[in-house]
Length: 400
Image (cartoon, rainbow, N blue to C red; front, top):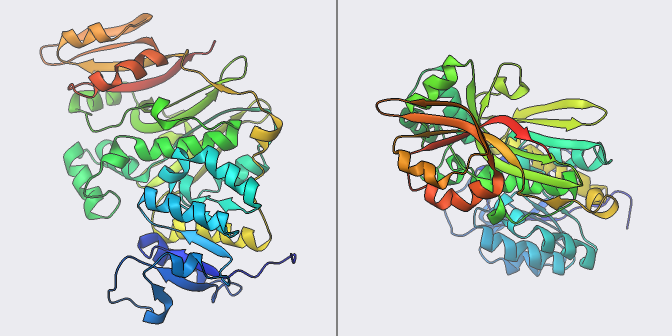
């Protein structure tokens, strides 16, 4: 194989990211003619010639001239079959489908080994922020302590309007939808699932293990109330939806996605609108901060382009933490401090606080702040989601 590989690309999907990629590719002299075929679901008027499009995945997958598949579709199940088959046929793949990757990470890593191909997915984690490559190449030692960040631009846009412009949550959500930052059904973003899948991917490159998304505490912002917003303001905080993976003692790690009270002393306090921000903390280098647009056609397209360019130079993830620093285990035996806002005191019987540092009872709402074990929160989450309550992390934990 030559040092500089010529790529012949088959592209799946021509939505916002697919079109963004095509536009940024056209500005790259080395890759302006790299896309041979684009597979889409149906015919419609498009700005490109009809001969460039196909409507059957096999037209790309069975084409021996196409050596690279770029998968940019929404359907995670369909994406799984496309990516798997492409690798089995010896084609390198670039994907941005975080749900598909997070739910099948172990198999995806194994397929790369078996078929000696590369699967790159920088765009799946934080849009334009090159966090995966940095975790792979720069933070590839055993000194990493945690990765914490705002991983979803839609929810961050909503919370920015709430705290910076005094909008009501419903009004901010509608504005995010009108501007294309949030889907008509915003569940994937505002309930934390998008952040969760990204966190699973970052955990693999941070600590070398694939964690089942179903086993991770995930709670979003849809139940936030004016009471919670006013409480945060009175304390000098903003509320951000944050994903975190943290190293505990004895090679255990903890991860969760929760709204969090964030003070002015934290880097992510100033991450606003649809931007993402990631704080990488290490034993020797303390904290380093990465910031950039987490969504949109051109920002995400630029991350896909970066992966495509890397394939030209035969780059592949080495999964260094999994191969050279093995032994990390996911643990739920970790207590974190949470804020619980409720109206019906009966809900408290489901919670098992180890200690309580603050509580308040008012005519409409009450709250309690204290430490509770992660495993207990995961256990009661189905019950919690059926009630009009709000949970947020304070950022404090018992690291034992």
